[in-house]
Image (cartoon, rainbow, N blue to C red; front, side, top):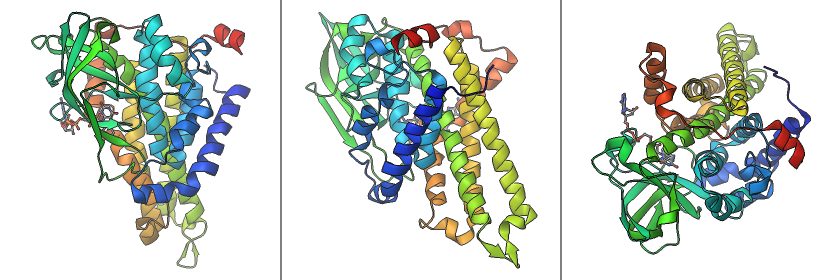
Length: 402
Ligand SMILES: Cc1cc2nc3c(=O)[nH]c(=O)nc-3n(C[C@H](O)[C@H](O)[C@H](O)COP(=O)(O)OP(=O)(O)OC[C@H]3O[C@@H](n4cnc5c(N)ncnc54)[C@H](O)[C@@H]3O)c2cc1C
């Protein structure tokens, strides 16, 4: 495995860094205070080509690899996780799902405009009564002639107000547990859809989170993604991509916490010296450095597995669990190093900690990731049960199209 970055990797990394630092960082505190997602963010991510980053060129994307996706997520989270969360949902959970499971017609109709940044996608798995326990969902889809009729309620849905399509999971067979779940593409302007925002979040306040309800929403039967009963498998494969974006993004939070801490430790003085000279402060900085490097290596490895098209559910889950927990711990340590100033929004570190808190919850809680890890280690979980091909990066195809 080669750890060096190509010229293309570096160019896209710089593009994402410049966008986050020059266009978002100056306004992020205000957006966080107002609890509003700045309206320019999604269109701008689209203009920069980031919304279709690793979607093939023939579907309107950039045809870049998964390492590039990880690098971009790291850069976005370095400034604010609301930026990366939008990309995680639109590209990681929705568009890559359409690429993997969609028919050619669905790819032309839904994936292409999403990759071009003309339309936005969201992911509707969680319900008021069902989060980790997906099989407990109440949403239903009933086949009537050439249509499905959808009923149900989704909550904690990122981009609920902005997205044009939702990947909606519902039961087509209410007695079959996970095997009774199917996936549907639903345009949000269909009659019977209502949606709204959730306010009062602890963090990720510059991001958009809301709810979406379907009451007798009629969609063409051709809007099913995959086959009836494949919804659980589809959701899990989407999470294999989404969790990669969360994990690599959290490496950016670790780097931001470390950079803020080293800067402050070299400025703030106590007991006649910079606090960076104090060994207990140095211990924190050393641990933060190690966590950052471990997270970086983990996501480069997972990106490499994805590029090769090798199943990576175990490694992606491990990355997600490790990086989210470490990022929260490091953001908390960054506040400690800043003392009272760290507790004020004069400095960024309190926002880092509030923001990153959600990452151990969404896209599968840390407890769920631990169950996955233990399941693999003990031999209770085998990939065959959830076998599905991942879309993989093809160097030859990329060379041809660029
Ligand atoms: C800001 C934000 C954005 C989100 N965006 C989206 C989105 O775009 N789309 C979407 O579908 N969802 C989204 N979510 C929802 C998120 O994915 C769920 O909150 C998450 O899956 C956990 O579900 P829950 O909140 O219902 O918790 P629950 O599943 O009720 O869990 C509560 C607690 O019980 C623990 N627990 C549950 N089962 C087990 C078990 N078997 N063993 C041990 N412990 C267990 C959990 O780990 C947790 O600590 C978002 C959430 C937030 C906060």
